[in-house]
Length: 491
Image 1 (cartoon, rainbow, N blue to C red):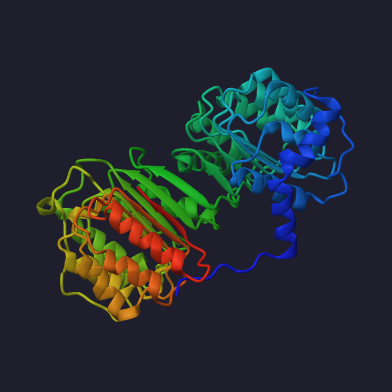
Image 2: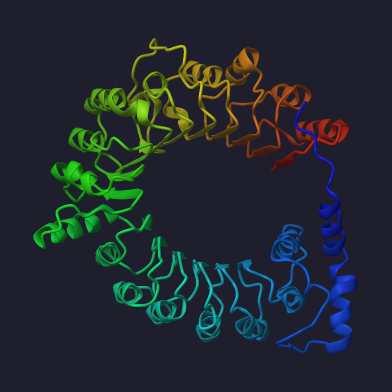
C-alpha cells in the first residue's frame, strides 16, 4: 500500500490548533486592543516561543492559505531568526515595522516582492546586521542596495539577486569592496551583471563556492591568468559549479582551470557541444553532475559516436545527467556506462521528429543499467526510438523514487505495466504525468494505489485519456485507503 500518514505529534497538533484559530483568537485579541494601528514593539503571546516554533507557525499558515502579512505584527518577535516571505504579503506600514525588528534576523527571503517600494526595502536592509542568508529574487534590488548590503551586512554568506536588472557590475564591485567578506554563495542570473562581475567576485572571494551567472568559467580563467602574471602560480579557488558558454573557446584551458579549482563537481555547458568540447569536459575528473544544453540546429548524426565515447570515459563519475534540447538519445549507452547515475533528465528538442533523432544501439544492455537511478524526468520524448526503449529504462530502474513523464508520446501502458511486473515500483514516492496522450490505462494507476510502495505524490495533468470519471475512481481509492499520505492532483 502507499505510504500511510503518520499520526501528528503533540507539537504538530498544537501548531495546527494555533494556525486554525489564529484569526479568531490570537489576531482578534490584538485587533480589539489596537485595531489597524501598526505598533513597532508588541508584547504578545508568542514572545517566549523559540524561533523554530515561530517559523513552523508561519510556514503552516502559508501552506494552509491562511497567512496575512499583518500577522507578523505579533509573530515577529526578538526570537525569530529565519523569515521566509514570498510575493507581496506585506503592506507598507508592516514593512516599516519589519525594518525596526530585523536586527537579529539570520535569514530573510523576500522573493518576488517586486511591488515593494525601493525605499521601504532599503529601510529593511539597513537593519540586517546579523543576516547570513538574503534572497531578493525579482525585487527592486539595484546597485544602490548592493552598496548598502556591502556596508551593513558583515555576516552575509549567501545572496540571491536573480531577476534584478538594476544590479550591474558597479553594484557587484561595491559588494566586493565592502564588509561582506564571508560571502560564499551568490546568484546573479537574469540580472544586469556581466562576466566582469565574475572577475570581481573571484578576485575578492577566492573561497567562493557558488557563483550563479552565465559563463562564470571565463571569469575564473581571467583571474587565474592574472595571478600567474603576478607570480601566484599556485592560487586555488573554492568554486564548485562552473557554467560554460561554448561560444567562448576554452578547450585548451580546461585542464589548466581544474588545476586551480580542485573542488568543481558540477558542470553546466551550453551552446555548440562539439567533440572538442566533450574532450575538454572529460578532463574534469572531479565532475559528478553534468548539464549539457545544446543549441538548436547544431547536433547532427556524426556526433553520436563522440557522445558515446565521452560516456565511456566519464560515465562512471556521474551521479546526475541533464540533457536539454538534444536529439542524442543513446538511452542504453547511458545506462551501460553511467553505472552510478542517480538523477537523469532528458528534455528533447521539441521541433524534432522520431526519424530525426540520433539513436544508438537497441541491443546494448548491462545488468546494472539504471539500478541506482532515483529520479527520472523525460520531456517531449517522442524522439526516443520506440516504446521498447522507455520500457527497458523503466524496467531497469527498480529503485526509482521520482518519475516525471511530460509529453512522452512513445509512452504506453504496456511500458509501465512491464516495469510494474518486474519491480512493482516499490520505492516510488512521486509520480507525475503531463500531456501523455497515448496513455489511457487507469488500471495501472489503481495498482499503484493498491500495492506496496512509498507513494506520496500523484499528479495527472492534461492526460486526456484519463477522464474525469477515471479521476473520480482514483479519488474513491484514496478515500478508501487507510489514511494514505498522498498529494493527488488531476486537471
